[in-house]
Image (cartoon, rainbow, N blue to C red):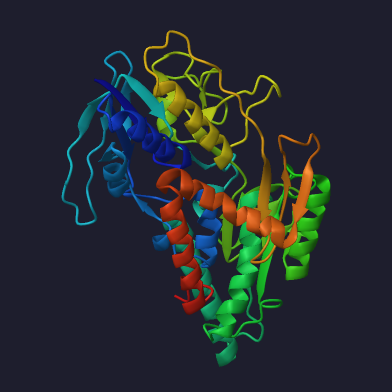
Length: 434
């Protein structure tokens, strides 16, 4: 029986394991194995909402073990540390919980087909001090760490004002990167500050004491969107009180400040770096071809250049679209489409030649607050870009996540979860208060 091993349970990896489990694992035609170092899955585009406290990550996480039992694949917890392409094995590191006891020993897992869905991590572009003094939003743990530190900073500023230690204490938040994550985080934080004040968690004024500054090296925010939408998003952020600084290249980060190429110093209590991504360090130890961002190069069938038995999808891979002539962006919709493609290809074993993957851009949506979003849609029945904004765009943005849940759980569970989350919003505060 063929063994298909998938490393990484992100948006693409978990969906692929679920589909192959339903197609091949249920009928015992193949053994499907999913490997991840974490016990749960979380949809990465929602991490900015975890960081701002507007959602509880525990309500949106999926237990890998439960998903595996429901969809006929095997889950192995651990971190891949080595690949032997000649023996068709991977080595999974030992797992030790917080108490230090070694719960799982190192293991070697055999594969006939290997799919790498390792995801990506923050790219600091070798900026001095950025890695040491910046927070990132690559995982739920990092997003929660930022949220708690942000609340603590607001409480400290409120305490200093009450005791008269400082007449006008400020909380300076600097977000480096004007892409989707940076814009969404800035907008959500404005809402969070007001909500925390309403519940007396702090007494600082959002428009005065909490200063959120968004730095972008390009000429405009959201460079992947239409210029009109970029200007609309920037204007909306400014109305919320966010200082938007374009054509601002960061050259250094200290513990309490950020420095740009013009010599300007930006005071910062918390610096968040969301300026780009690169492949994880494990990618450099696999003996596969990589691009400058440490992403694995794949051909038109998503196979690695050096080994046809090894595939790569999602943010860890670099697939060059033959129509556009450039690599597709690291987005969730790319991972989703690649998972669908491999589910069809690997679900029909025995092919001598594999079909080619074709990426189709359906557009992009960016949230700019609780009740607004901007974006562009690309449809099958119109050739031009369809610009959307306001509440309609926000509704479409929320449906993107429900589409992901639908692909993993089916319609019934998706509908039940939607109802449960809606009820929860009616009986709990709009943000986490501690």
